[in-house]
Length: 294
Image (tube, rainbow, N blue to C red):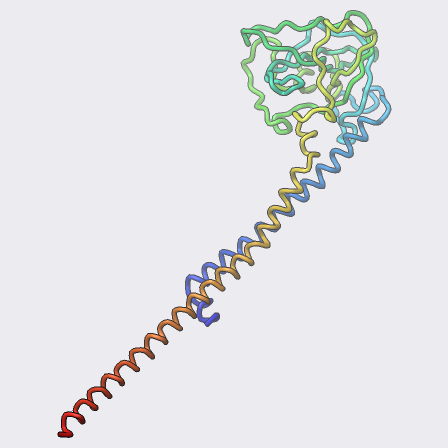
């Protein structure tokens, strides 16, 4: 009976569909697990970079190059003076809480070696008119030494932010050294410095809100991936893959049970019909016999 049920069109299609889903679910679980491993490696690299001793910016990056992945978030230092005339802001950025949208203030630092380092001095709130350059804290005058985290150039691909033109003067969507090199006369070092400290230290009222460390925020992708979201997803997909054969067995057993119950009911109905006919015939014959006896 089981084989007869499995060979029906319904069960052939159902079996093919069920077991075509299993490899897809297993693949999804493996993909999430690989993301989990990648996240762990990435976070381990970030932690190692944050814990590494500070180095000079020019030791890990150079004009026209790129920031090595292993050096992302490395503490770097640069000495020079700010080029306030070429300062700009980056739109659609959130504060430390991730709730308020404003701007990042980017001020080029002309180093003692003659190169330019883009310094993200932090976040400021937007004004009432987005077409007007916002009010920003003044950059320290004179020679300063800045310390911060090394970040790679932002691109639309890496950030998901569409880099559109036609923006107000000195407003951009991305922090990108190649883009800024087109308007600056000095060579621009690849990547940018995410400011954490300045020497001499300026008054707190003259500083923008520093971008929080990835170890202290949940607003950046680099921080979120370490929360373990990928591993539960992987386990979830694998559980689904295991449940598909179990569901197939449950449905098959139900259909087999129903088929047997239907067959038993049909057999019982046949026996009752045959018995009833014989009894009636016997009763009729007896009646005739008794009628003939007198």
